[in-house]
Image (cartoon, rainbow over all chains, first blue to last red; front, side):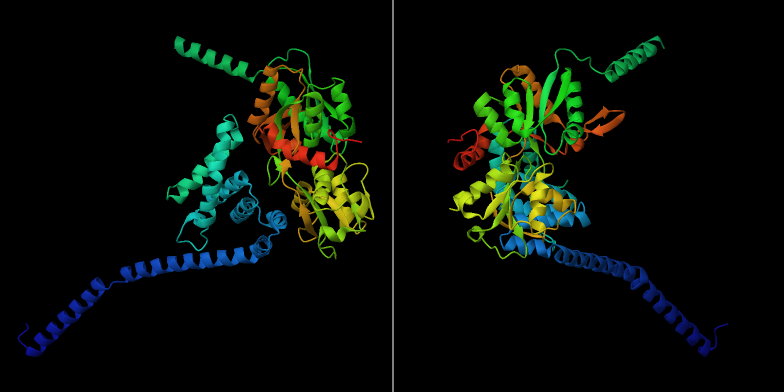
Length: 180
Length: 299
């Protein structure tokens, strides 16, 4: 049947081509490509989301930051009240309030606001996130928590102080890498 | 089967008893509430809280609206067992009538504290307290800690005597005095106003004013907000129970009024209560002494 040399050569060539195709299909298959592409897409989407978030925050909160930086702390708080009308429940509102209240020396209120912000958005304590605010949260915990704890010792029946201490411990645990 | 029926009977009886309201016993507890704007508003705010206290204390409670100016004389006449008023009234009743501190109300950004601010329109030429010389100012009512006392004190501390150095100053009449003060500057009737920070915050939140409308020339330190106190004649056990009910109040607590179930704190415009110490009120004492106001007024 395959006595003819030409036939034998054709069959051998066909087998080589098929093997080559099989290697191509198996070795560098489309599944791997898809996985890699999908990972890249996710990274890209995440990056875009972060950039959009950062841009959104800058656009809406830059007047608050400007007031805060100029020392007009009360005006900055009022600006946040105004923003609360259009962005109710925004985590960044709580974060900025916490920041300003900390600068005003209201440690208990600052801890409560910052804990509310971190509960809504853990990026604020994630060192790798562009939204990270770890130095702010760290200073609220290191400055505020001992003061509130001391006050709770003198008023052990105060539920609101106990709650602030809990908020402080929550922030401490999140800074240390603990989960919800 | 018998056991099951017995258990179910006990459970149902327990649930039924639990659902029953506690019978009210003893003479009524009279609670005086300082009017902020009107008797109607005071009753609307505090009837639910009073009904809640009644349920929790197992005693009939009566809400009595009282004008700020009359509060001390009516308290001295023994008309109230408990009072709710501003923190300057707490100091006056504490110094003159041994009022016991019960709990401090929480509302706004500073919780159980608040502050007074001196404000001008954003486009005003006035840049500092120095520039107030010869200007027209409007204060809140005279017994308002953050509508009058705190601002008057701020000016005295800065070496500015409002009585001598302002062109003139006015006090608003009627209801919504703090709003009138803020609008007085907004519409240009006055150059400068003594505004409670909490009112600025609430009016901004409600969209009545914008944060960009005003500049804050000066702001006082924060001082305790409205306060519940008990007459010295009130039994310590009752005063403690009263305090515990207030401190345990959560935003979810409800009560039925005229067939409607209302949230107690929401209805009263209160975020909660906090147990402050009498010494937390010392900054108000210092201010009242410097401004020569009751209870330290000297002639």
